[in-house]
Amino acid sequence: MVHRMSGTTPWLDPHALSSAEAIAQAAGALLLEGWGQRPSARTKAAATDLVTEFDGRAEALILDRLTTTFPTHGVVGEEGGQAGPADTDFVWYVDPLDGTMNFVHGLPFFAVSMGLVVEGEPVLGVVHAPVLGWTFSAVRGGKARLNDDTLRVSNVGALPDGLFGTGFPYVAGQPNANLPEFTAFLHNTHGVRRLGSAALDLAFVAAGWFDGYWERHIKAWDLAAGAALVVAAGGRVTDLDGGTLDVRSGRIVATNGLIHEQTVNLLRAAHAAHPTP
Ligand code: IPD
Ligand code: CA
Ligand code: CA
Figure 1: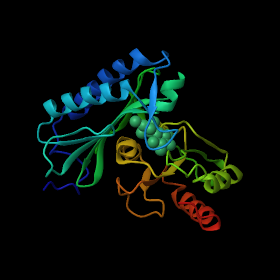
Figure 2 (figure 1 turned 135 degrees about the vertical axis):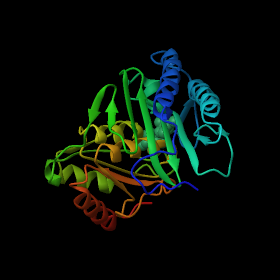
Figure 3 (figure 1 turned 60 degrees about the vertical axis):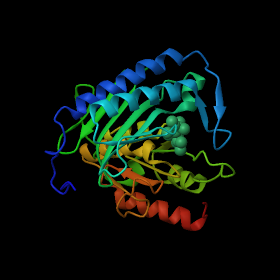
């Protein structure tokens, strides 16, 4: 059992962040081999839930290197990879290619996402977008960074001035889930963007480019890294109702902190008016 309540991470290897960045960048270089080639894809849970050979190859590379670098940590990857001890408080959640739909279509908005969760709390995150040359990273107790620059969430204090990100779940039979919330935010804020990469949505909140982001039906590998980034950049991450974030619940809202309550309230009102799964 580690004592995570302190704000720093003395129990973590001081090189953990740079090691994780190097691993994410190696996986990103592998993804670049396939980007722009219109790689063939097969579908998973839904017609919009794609996977290519590059997802699997990048995950294999990451799992291999994470288990070598952190032999006492567990690793869970989106494409089925599991490694390391099962009874550990330290678990890496890995999405080797977040934004596969964008990748397949040649859009540059996709990323390698690696988040270390300790006793359920995201404490370290790396989100690397190889085409853009952007490596977002943070470890709890330190600053969030984009390459060599320090990141800070925005100081927007009123919902109508906020720009938001969100995503639509790749859940079979539920193409309309999130439309009521999407409409409510379109009408009550500066607007809503749908990038197609949850990890980048969260990184954009950390960078202060988005003032908030929400999504439901997503997975720990989509959000663990980004949640660590947002907190280190001074923002707030919670469950959709404003309660403590559970990385495996599938629901998250992240903001600059200043507009968190307003965001949660609008989400609640939109959902109550038109409930979707
Ligand atoms: C998806 C992306 C998308 C989000 C979906 C995720 P994938 O991940 O993060 O933005 O809306 O819920 O599944 O399938 O591209 O790794
Ligand atoms: Ca994903
Ligand atoms: Ca993925």
